[in-house]
Length: 225
Image (cartoon, rainbow, N blue to C red; front, side, top):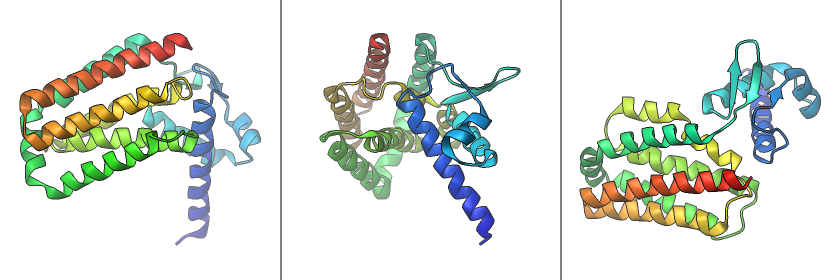
């Protein structure tokens, strides 16, 4: 392996994690401009890995690059939340019949759902530091990604990935009650139960309720900010 390439890749990861942590802990605020030179001074990392880390965060939807304005922490507003969750509802409820069929036929996916839920429940039942918080929302994303993966439509899964709907999670860190986080996991369990029972009507209801509850919860948290 090219040692220089490996070291550079490691520095990208370090810069990526530092940036995400600072945005989540509101050291950088929504709308704030991020200047590569200042980030280099802040983290002690050369500008090339920082630029690559910024590109990664642009892909994830946490920051944005606009002509003549440079790179900024992405602002999130109620209209964005509504549009993104409407898109998620449309995608996640359209393929329910295919999802049920493919879930039933794939014991590996069934086991992965159980493992995801077990780890998710274990994390949220304890106090969450920021690293646990990142893992919780990774598990949340992976649950929905597995769910949509059962549709068998790779394009739909790609569209879901590109929506970046989980970026909102980094704006509500420390503002959401533990009970609200636990409630979200319980809703995942209800979705899983509908999959196991092969109940299409129940599955649609659970997904729609989960996304509507997420909409209300996110707006409520941001309104309190």
